[in-house]
Image (tube, rainbow, N blue to C red; front, side, top):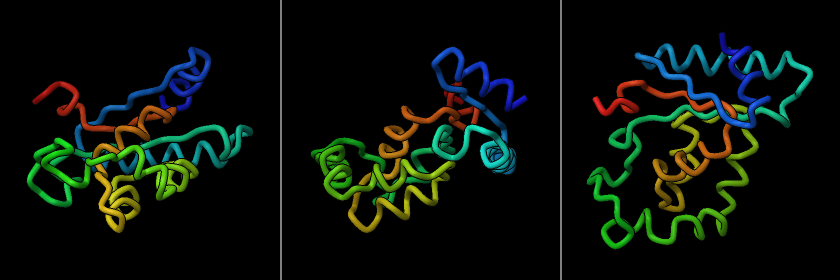
Length: 136
């Protein structure tokens, strides 16, 4: 299912949103994506994927007050991401999992959740929990 969906997404110039019910399913999709990319003629330069996680699980301060005046991790986020080179570093990965994003953002106190959202815009495959999409 994944390969045909990616092919369609590439032909249509869009991205594939793969929704799962469980964390283990998300890790299986990520592994399948990595295997497909490594085995394909496209190589690792073409396709990118990201797995998203709930904000509550990616907020280092833990207060969930997501406003630049209330949270220094969000203040001037895009500028600081560029200055620190975090987006460039993370953009090279074939698949980004939430832990990689948290690890890259934490030393510079950059918001991992919103960084993941920015990176998701560039991804060919976005893997996430269907409950978050549906607002459950």
